[in-house]
Image (cartoon, rainbow, N blue to C red; front, side, top):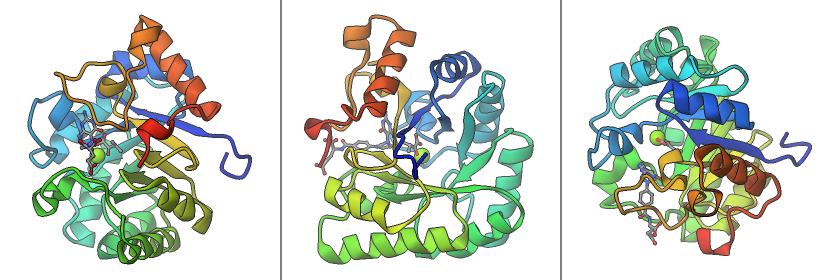
Length: 253
Ligand SMILES: Nc1nc(=O)c2c([nH]1)NC[C@@H]1CN(c3ccc(C(=O)N[C@@H](CCC(=O)O)C(=O)O)cc3)CN21
Ligand SMILES: CC(C)C(=O)C(=O)O
Ligand SMILES: [Mg+2]
């Protein structure tokens, strides 16, 4: 799809009924995000989420899917070293029925990425804003704004590709940097708050359906407003990503 210039559409899901709607609407990649800690569990970050919780939600999401690729987040502290990373990735594959696992970070986690890939498990990287590091970052802010940070992120993307990653999510970074990263690797770059020039887009499904308890990141959009029902809202998102009308300038940095 990257080679063909066809945008890859992704949304998060945390249960089977939701997953079924995304699957039948043509969402290509369904992400069981550790964002479930915030939108499902009501916690103030993703840090408390466990491997067991991720495996459970991944398992129930898998029952709603027929076509979409199921990608499941490895949560905070589940990949502190390559051996532990492989063990936990195996749990998400065998108990969560994931097709691919996602880990946050660049060069620091390369050994873990390599070991997981060596076991035949597809890996998705995650660069830019890393919510599992929110306590170091001090908040959810745009990343990669200066040249040094930007160049490190491009190098991280190349290293992840080299280590065998199949795709990379880039979160909350300037559109210009996302464009450079997308041009620097041959694996698909899936953006969230990263502008329209990535190979695909992902959003937290609750945000685009306005199930938000009042707060939604500025890069997201309420697709429920005009659509009126869930399937129509998801369909409007799929169409908007495919024809590059989402994200617009107002959803980008
Ligand atoms: N509901 C929800 N949506 C998400 O997109 C999301 C989660 N939860 N939980 C995990 C992370 C945390 N995320 C977030 C949360 C807040 C902002 C936010 O408020 N960003 C500001 C940018 C601030 C700046 O200018 O630097 C914004 O206005 O969007 C961004 C990402 C993304 N992920
Ligand atoms: C926002 C996406 C990329 C994510 O990691 C999550 O939902 O946890
Ligand atoms: Mg996540």
